[in-house]
Amino acid sequence: MKDLKPVHIQKFYDSLYAKGLNGNSILHYHANIRKALDTAMKLDIIPTNPADKIERPKKEQFIGDCYNLDELQTLFEKSKGDPLEIVILIASFYGLRRSEVLGLKWSAFDFTNDTITIKHKVVETIVNDKRTLLLKDKTKNSSSYRSLPLIPEIKETLLEHKKKIESNKKLCGDSYIKEYKEYIFVDSIGKIFRPEYITDHFSLLLKKQNLRHIRFHDLRHSCASLLLAKNIPMKAIQEWLGHSTYSTTANLYTHLESNTKNVSANVLANAISFV
Image (tube, rainbow, N blue to C red):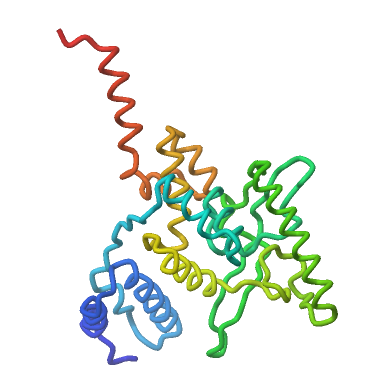
């Protein structure tokens, strides 16, 4: 470690760029390397942190893809009867992250006052070279914890889904997995859906139904796009999606604001006399 020079780290980053990784991915490497070397410096293993002496990889703005309203309607129709039918519906309507959808518990729904509270998440990580599910009773950040209205259509769908789960429990008897009984999205034997299953199955569903390919996370972008198209203020979209700051929402979706900008232009044009 004492022989590690800034040039070695820079060459490593250059090799990652050559492999096709973008700045955002390389930033993750940089953060981990810098943190490790910072610890080594504090322990007097190395005199300085060589990661501080190179140019920090630049963050690149990511512009997600999205479905328009017609494409979403087609997706809902084509996914009827699919294991991800309700997952897709809720992710699209509420703009939830994959971890938030999988983290939904029955306790998150108030069927009396018609609200849904986003307060849990399910993620997958590698522990001892083995994929492990982490069931967390907290969201990505404090802003991600949010309550949203439960519309009648989704309420009815969920209640039907609950009946189906109860039927599966009776059919499976003692073989039914009870570990995930609090969670909404489980398979026919009670096993919770894994994040990678959501990603892979969603891609296969689109291909099977000859639908334009987008990522599962792009359903969240589709939600934001539809809200912007209806002139919903960016601040309201921030609260709906659970972003920690207004700037996060604005940076992600400013390219979709052309419609609201056109409305503003028309208002000004009608108000100002150019004669």
